[in-house]
Length: 451
Image (cartoon, rainbow, N blue to C red; front, side):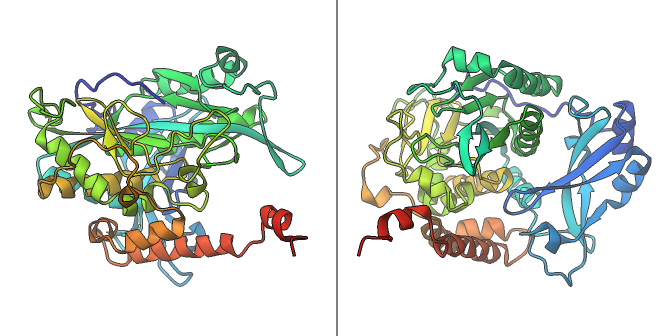
């Protein structure tokens, strides 16, 4: 629930782009590098490369069996995925292990960027924006729960966190002080600009915020922060989960994205003469309209699991609010909408959740928004959010139906090579039916003696 100040200027990467990976790694005192990429499902995969092999990593990359990694569009017979490091993403993390660093990589196969690699897909979409003279900046809000599993049950890691209204509770934040401040210090050490750390609406739920940046940098940082949160929580005997809805009666965890477009003259969203009073330009309204038109299909990318729809379909929580939109509408500083307009500089996409792959989420949102810009769409007046025609998909299966019918998002996924959208939808349908075919405790409770 960040209330971030308005964006003021484009953020540039702090890394020296004139240096090689070998140079920056040695200069930082790095001894081992996690050469990392994520699968279509968002799983972080890495090999630990010693500094003695950094030049080989830089020149040749490092190989992976793509089928073994999972959800990368490969079979056992296929050629290796070769992860090629992006020096701009090099991130020393000695606060996790002395001498350790992460570098995000672009998977290649037989010398070409692999079409099923999420980071490669986002790169292509950002090049498309650049061809229109636009740069995309993104801010991300990462919500998560700190939990333990006790006798097969999921419980809040902080047993004192039991209030019926825990959001922003200073006492709950203080009990988790060591964890929260270690994460915050890590972000600030990396130059990310951590500006707030708070208790969210659910017991055991937190959010830690950092400054916005260009879309690729932010996506890399989401992946890195999820890794850091998991490792830091484990040190204290806890588990950080980004699962959208781990508790039936509590608020779910979102991945809200704050999106803005820039050109050489600066931000393109503000317009003081906006007749609708939101301070937005015609380009901004077209971007909003594009996202709204493709919202149902976009949900398949930003809410990509069976569990996602326990969050978006929730009608109530212990606190009385779900903070999760059910309709594809937009409005001003109103958190019930799919697209919130907190100020004239940005739009906040609130439909995404903690299971979203940040590269695919950003690529899909940008593709949808740019389609609106190209076609000069207008979203009409701010909506009330109660029209059945604006309702978002109720299940992952419905979301895949919408995705497979949306050519703009199909083209975004297939931008580097054909078949990615079809493969993604197929794996998600299989995920849905694997869940659907599993007998649950709810069914036992309701049907065991019902007849």
